[in-house]
Amino acid sequence: MTPAIHTHSPIHTDGTFSHLQCKECGATYEAKAMHVCELCFGPLEVAYDYGAIAARVSRQTIEAGPHSIWRYREFLPVQTDNYIDMGTGMTPLLKANRLARRLGLKALYIKNDAVNMPTLSFKDRVVSVALSRARELGFDTVACASTGNLANSTAAIAAHAGLDCCVFIPADLEAGKVLGTVVYAPKVFAVQGNYDQVNRLCSEVANTHGWGFVNINLRPYYSEGSKTLGYEVAEQLGWQLPDHVVAPLASGSLFTKIYKGFQEFIKVGLVDEKLVRFSGAQAEGCSPIAQAFREGRDFVSPVKPSTIAKSIAIGNPADGVYALDIARKTDGTIESVTDAEIIDAMKLLAETEGIFTETAGGTTIAVLKKLVEAGKIRPDEVTVVYITGNGLKTQEAVQGYVGEPLHIEAKLDSFERAYERSQTLERLEWQTVVV
Image (cartoon, rainbow, N blue to C red):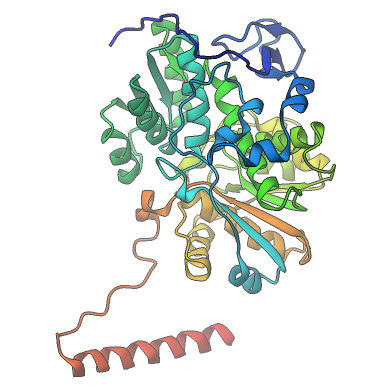
C-alpha cells in the first residue's frame, strides 16, 4: 500500500464552497487536506457562498433530489458530481408515541440512524462526504482512528469506492464492531490504548505517510456530513424546526453540526428562524463536557474513559468548548448517566418503540428520561432524540440484563405450562413496578 497521490479528473465542477477558515482567528486557507490553523492552532471549517446556495436550492429542488444525503449537495464540501452515494441518509424520523406516554411527553420523535446505510450508524454520513472529498483531492489511501462505528463506515465505503484503507482502533473494542470492519478487508491495527492514544498515533502516521485520515487532515470536510442530520429533521417535520433536540456527545462535533445545519437552513430561507434548545448526553465514565457544563467552566478538562458506551468515550473532545457554548446559548443542558441507566434505557427504547440501539443511543435515551424527570424538557415541546448506532454492534452491553427463551418440549402441554409460568412472572413484575 503506497501513499501515492494523483490528480483526479472531475466530471463537473460547481462547488458552493471556496476555502477553509479558522473558527478562532478567521485566517483563511486553500481547501486542501488540513485541519488546524497555522497561526493559532484553532480548528478549520469549510466556508460556503450562501448567496450561491440560496440561488440554487428550494424546498422543491431538494425534494426532487436523490433519496440520500446528496439531496443537500449544495451544502456539502464537494466540487464535482462524482460523489460517493451508497444510499446514506434519509433515515426514519419516527413519532415515538409509546415512549412519549411512558415519559409524559406529547410530541417525541426519534431520528433513527441505527438503520443508516451501509453500516448502521450516523458515521456513514460523515465518511461519505470525507471520502468523496478525499477522492477529489487525489488520495488513493484513506484511514481513520475509531471507536468502532467510524471504522465500519470507512472500511465499507472505501471498499465501494475502490480506495485502499487502513483503520486504527483500541484493542478492547466490542467484537461486533471489529468484525464489522475486518469483513471489508482493510488493514486493521488494534492499538493497546484508549481512543485518545489511538488518535495521537494516527496524527503521526498521517504526517509520515500522507494518507487521507477522515477525522484528522480531512476533518473539515468529514464533519460537515453531520449537518445532514439537521437538514433531514427539518424536512421531515414539514420544513419546520423542532423545539428541543437531545444528542450524544463524543468529540462534540455531531452536536455542533446539527446546530449548524439548522442555522444554514434559516440563512438561505428554507425554514423560519427559531431558537431550538440543544441538550447533550454523555456517559458518566467519560463525561468531560458534562462536567464542564455542571461546573460552569468554558474549558474542558480531559478524562480517562471508563464506560460501556465506548463509541462516545472520547476523553479529550476536540469540539467540547463549542458544544458547551451551543447548549448554553440555546437554553439547553448537558447531562451524564451511569452505565446501569444506559442499559435500562436501551431496554426501554427496545420494548416501547422496537428500536435496538447501541450504548450511545442508550446514553441519549437515559439522558432524555433524566431531563424529563427534572422538568428540563417541557411535555409540550416538539423534541427530537438522535439515535446514532445499532444495538447489534454492542450486544455484550445487555447480555445478562434481558430475558431468556422459554425452553419447552415439542408438546402442547409443555407449551401451556411454560406460558402460564411466564404470565405469572409478568403479573408479579407489574405488581412490583406499581408498588
